[in-house]
Image (cartoon, rainbow, N blue to C red; front, side):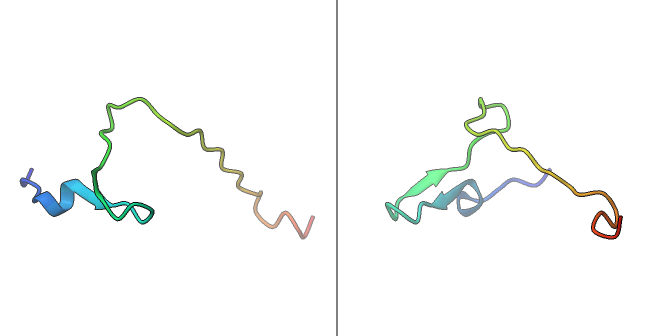
Length: 45
């Protein structure tokens, strides 16, 4: 795996304009996400 530069390890928070590190995949989650995918041609049935 290629090493990441500092720009790839951080993002700019649009609210505070400060640089913050990206979270790790090993960190505990902070949000739950539900995705609802309709059935194929659901409207036509």
